[in-house]
Length: 273
Image (cartoon, rainbow, N blue to C red):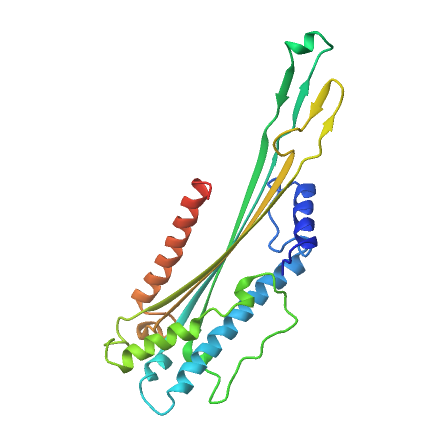
């Protein structure tokens, strides 16, 4: 978990020293990244946390309606999950200098110069996984046990993703008759995106008798962007394929959500947002 103060300075300092934008970004923030084991630990923690969130959401909704048939259709549904982890690192250098010749020439002539350089690297990792709702249900008193020792670098781990709230709204629609034919064509999709930017700069300056260095602008600056995106699609199981896939409209909705997210990210990147 990134904390203000010391950790922020360490992250920016580490990014500048490592040459952000000149290598593939690490999944975890400095100083936790740097090894396969530490980076994989974060991905595994996110997947476990999302799995727990799904189990708790399904169990909570089904148990809340244990005495009615309103939520029975869910047991014939599945959940397709897409996790996207996008990281961008960028560094820039902008040294400036000015030279003043000896008097009296300095009163009418001076020489200044500047250099601009930047490097930008982006990494996008995606993983899809699938569950049957019947496999997610934990029973009348079930509750997923969270791993309290897992990494907490991602807000997908730390936050309530509101899956239960959205699933409950779907079931309420069926219970009130506002949603019909739920087992044929209806699809429930839920998307959560967390994006965090961290940036900083450093500009040591020198002022000599006949020259100055870095009196304006930033000598070195660094940016690290982390975007963690989660798409969850609930839909009926496709009985024509042994119930191991969502019905076609569910699969199409899931793919469309990922494409839309990718296009939006692309436009933001092109616009420099």
